[in-house]
Image (cartoon, rainbow, N blue to C red; front, top):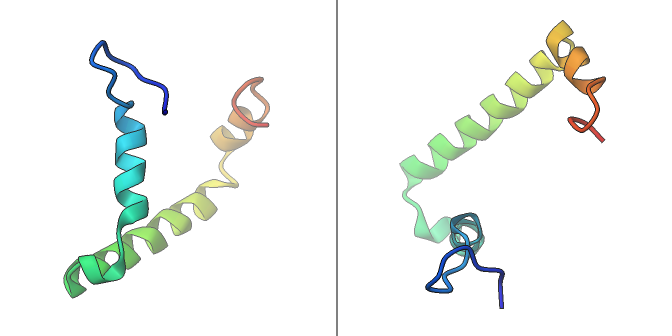
Length: 68
């Protein structure tokens, strides 16, 4: 059984959300939702790549416990 975080024995909300996301299929989503998801994923990747060379990112990467 998954670890619990409340007295009722319910799994943590992050685990419940992850299980729902993993159970999703493209058939469960509308074409508009799929289109928006693709745009959001591409945007996230673009922002991560653009920010990788920022000075503040380099500072964070040298901070113990932030990056492995």
